[in-house]
Length: 184
Image (cartoon, one colour):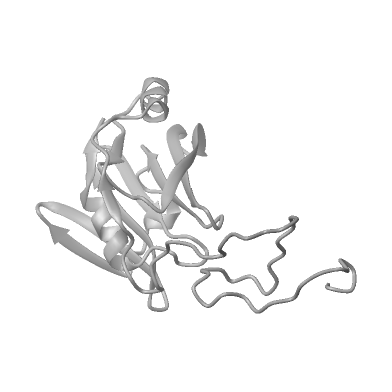
């Protein structure tokens, strides 16, 4: 790579940089910045901040859908909402409305929130573990020792959080997110 970009300076990746990249290319004349990110070490919970305000994206989604949306009122500051997509899921019982929310961090790692009236969606048929907490039944879905999905139902609406492909959200973070969901 250095030969192709000659003249180039080749350095090892900084140890604090949170990335799975094997090569990081920084292009710029006289770069004097720092290649570090304020990310927690793997296995540590993210940094949450209260989000009492309902954002315009949540309001717009709520206006489009015929069921009560819920949103996290505590949100990891390392991530931001990047997409709200309402659509219909075709089922044997007819179309079911749904909302998919995607959240990204600076490294492009994504996780999601799903809300739908398709309460018997195949994804939620066989939880690894079910726990009744504060009168609500939470369903935990693991892949090995990693929590991939955390689902719960409130009335005729099914909600779940999908972990990223890189499992960026540890179990404590996913549980904290789920517990913070409140109606819009």
